[in-house]
Image (tube, rainbow, N blue to C red):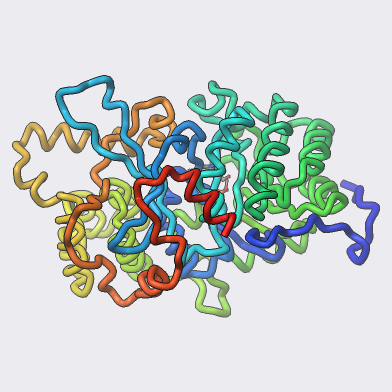
Length: 450
Ligand SMILES: Cc1cc2nc3c(=O)[nH]c(=O)nc-3n(C[C@H](O)[C@H](O)[C@H](O)COP(=O)(O)O)c2cc1C
């Protein structure tokens, strides 16, 4: 396809990058992934060289009303809420952690992705996290019915007026006051002319970046990405000064850099290859793909440090450990972090694992559980895996999470494992010693005014 660009690189305009934002140019980044993009996965991707990380899509309504609190043990920020408990009053509702951010280790590198179909809700939700992230991205590519039926995700590609109004509202009411970038992630449309007209409108909203997943909405993930609209999209972005990030079948850093050059895009985003082994972000020159056991060790370490929900950790272990290895079956059967570390012979992680099992009350639960209850619980874990928790939370049915941190727990610091940066930051970063009862919006506003 012929280049549409009228600007030579020297005179190309550039949308200014806000002071607390980040430029997507020259980056190879972790894609937003529900379930697979929780905090430990993001820390793993950063460890292996991802330049930026996108958080999993969080639905606006799930975030609105959350309380922002600091986890006293590891200094991470947790956005928590009480689920509706299905209207039941007989059992106490348990808090759900809707999102968890490591403001020290993700500083300047985390893009928070929102699922939204409404400018006001988008602004309300984005304000809650704006003080803790480098950018807010709008998901305009998710083809799943839970998203599209509410007008979110890929449905926004068919309602460009709405998508434009969401982005404009975010730029004006969140991006500008909080000095962070706003971006959007789209899919290609089957008619290139329609893609062209959509992208031409999006780049005039004040966004700093646009990611294009090079598949159409009906395409299945296993179908090969289509790249013939990419250069045209990049040219439209460049004429408006907006960074263009490509996504779809990018497998590793070296290949990403080659393709960025070939298609004239500014960045590349990796999803499934990173889900399987995050060391895909490491170039061959720096060591290339790491052995799965090393990756799993680092993942378990970050999971313990992050106090990640055990069901989520188990899900990722099933992705990271090759199926034919004996550790795969053992990880599947593990009921606690301690089990995982013993089975994997990660002996140095055991003290932290024991501490976390106690915090998450995993040990007591499993010990006390009669066989039938245990079976039911396995099913619940499976359901949680199969459903998008943030979407369910948005509907007022947040998953019953085992990972709810107990703020009153008097146990010592969980990060005893030789990665003290965040704890150290916790001492020096004033914004994380806030009153845990303050609603997140107020905290975020306070942060931006200091
Ligand atoms: C497990 C999983 C969860 C995903 N969740 C999201 C999401 O929350 N938001 C989003 O925009 N895309 C999501 N995606 C799509 C990816 O971000 C990406 O666009 C897609 O997988 C294509 O990239 P790939 O070819 O590198 O896999 C998800 C993909 C996977 C595999």
